[in-house]
Image 1: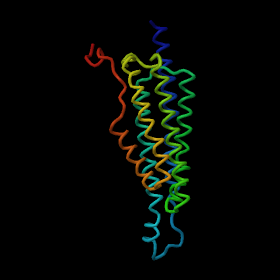
Image 2 (image 1 turned 180 degrees about the vertical axis):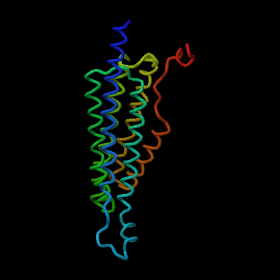
Image 3 (image 1 turned 90 degrees about the horizontal axis):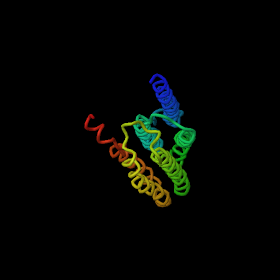
Image 4 (image 1 turned 120 degrees about the horizontal axis):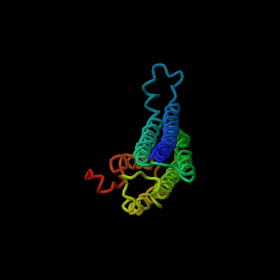
Length: 217
């Protein structure tokens, strides 16, 4: 029993290390967003006007903050059910973090070029493209976790968890549509990403719990 307890504790420690590292990356990425909102130089009596002209920076900041923040909430919730990790999970998690920490760059593009007719579409395509990659990475993470269910703790209903894969796949189709929308309107594309972030914040895909756990057996 002592050996089993030590193995379980070691597995939990590995999962906690992955989550702690991820939390640090999320924190850095979300902090970098504010660095793109610059103080208007030499505005003088026209400071209010100059601040108003910076609305693309505010919009890109708020939407990107929502995207990263809600992704962190969902990631934290997911890993609260992960009892152990393997190398594949760690690499898939790294791929997800690679896209998360890159978000400040397309956010800066949107802030800089949102009002320019031609360049705004390019910036929106880059922004939406990164969102597509991030969604696919999160889906790959979920698919690996539900493939056998051996990384989840005993609370999770593995069969029900695998059944949620279809919903993940359908959700991932929404993001490629924003790439097409980027060629129509960059501001609308940014607004849609904000709405999607809010949607996934309130309509989070819950990890299925075994009925015996729900009943307290």
